[in-house]
Every structure is written in C-alpha cells, then in structure tokens.
Length: 170
Image (cartoon, rainbow, N blue to C red; front, side, top):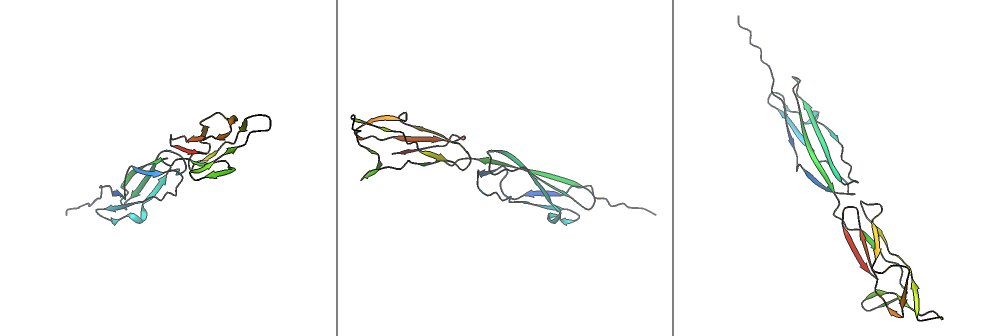
C-alpha cells in the first residue's frame, strides 16, 4: 500500500490591471483599475480578491492599494499598487470688475478725484484651485495704490501649494 498525499503549497498569482505606480490628478474622481487573481489548482480567484485602499484623490501624496487573495488550500498572496496623486492644474483667477473696456481687453479707467490727478485702486483678484483651498495671490503693484490718470495695467499672479502658477492682467 502506498499513500500519496497531493498538496497545494503554491501561492495564487495576482495581476494588477493597469499601471503601478499609477499617476492620478488631484481633485478628480478616482477609479481603481483593479486586479485579477488565479491559482494553478483552483483556477480563477478574482471573485475572492479583496482590495484595501488608502487613496485620497483630493490630497497630493503617495498612496497604496493592497490586493489580497487566498486559495482553497489556504495559500495567500498580496500585491500592492502605488497611486501618486499629483496637482498639475493651475489656479483659476477671477479679476475684479472693471468700469471700462477697450479693443485689447479689460482695463480700469481711473478718473482723477476732484482734489488731484490720481485715483486710488484697491481691488484684488481672487484665486481658486482644485487641490489647494488657499492659493496665494499677488499683484504687480502693491494695492491699494494711487494711480495716475490714464490706463494702468495690473498683473495678478496666483501660486498653489504644488507650485502651479497663473497670471491675469487687468
């Protein structure tokens, strides 16, 4: 009499679908491309595959998705996908309201006050960003400013936490 014990000591295989590392734009919807799992004895194990994710698509950083599966013999396997959330989107600048326009675009036409040949302008543009709640905002001249009669162009510049820069001229 001979007893033959057939055992399965081979771990299942996990195939990550898509790129790893995966680059994802901040503040956009994230969908995990997933993975598949198979075993030499049990065949497809994709239905039993679990994924644990730390991905925050609204914050720049490096995150992981860990896929795990076990075959009927108790052999376990894990695979890890890295997801790098990046911010490459420039801030959006909203210019202050103007009181005149010309053929080349918006500008502020300042009329001298009755007491002199200058007018004060203090309107600051605002900036918004998909991934930075408070991007910086600066103007090409310190505001409020006393400006001479005529047209004065003011350039506003915004920078977000990732270093993306936008400019707009009023």
